[in-house]
Length: 127
Image (cartoon, rainbow, N blue to C red; front, side, top):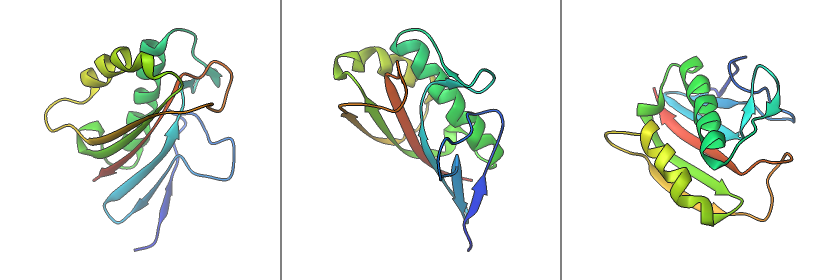
């Protein structure tokens, strides 16, 4: 099973030497997504709720391109700039993941790439 790059213009294009996702067999590894609007290539303005929606919309678009969806995600990692925003982020996250929710890790970090970025989420899913 050779790794295959996943690429869609419905999510932000990578700004470095990595792919939006890599599929190996039926497993999809989605790179950390930040709240960039793929149509403007800019960080979305707004609080943690707005940014969480944008990030999860980006993850969903990448998964769709890979032949999967959010309901097939088995693991996420959330990187928060401020763990004090956990409850607000978690409320939005719960709207996107219903049914069997993924295993998850959430950590506070000192910095994230991009001015105004409040969070980053990566994911592992199956097809």
